[in-house]
Amino acid sequence: MWDECKPITWAYLAGFTDGEGYIGIVNNSPRITLYQNADASWVLCEIEDFLREHEIHCSIYPVSRKIDRRHPNPGMYLHVRRVRSVYEYLRSTQPYLIVKLEAARTVLKFIERKRKAALAATDGRAKKAYYQGWGE
Image 1 (cartoon, rainbow, N blue to C red):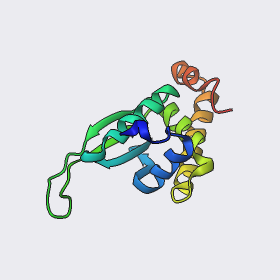
Image 2: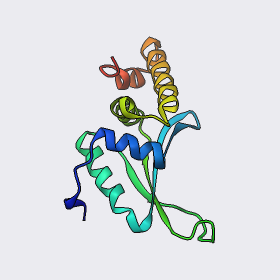
Image 3: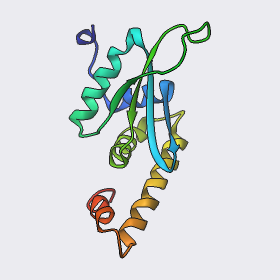
């Protein structure tokens, strides 16, 4: 089915995120979540492959909610949770985002603040090493 379609691009991913995604900060950690009904969840697998090709870590999980009249179909989530992966995802999709552009800017600023604080710290060598060499 997907072979007949065009390959995923950052612009497509931004549109998907605008329509079916969440960009935000949960428990002091940046997060991106994409949603799709189970009957079309193959697209999340294609997105997962695309992201992993670009060294962005992500995982797919089933939605854990009851099936009812309001939510008649089971769904799947694709989560991007690692700080560097969220950062790279947002840097790559930001030029194409419309609806979630402000949320992306907020999360990118949050990550930059965390990165600068870690690099300026005199302790915590592990965090400092994690943030060195990216985001510049």
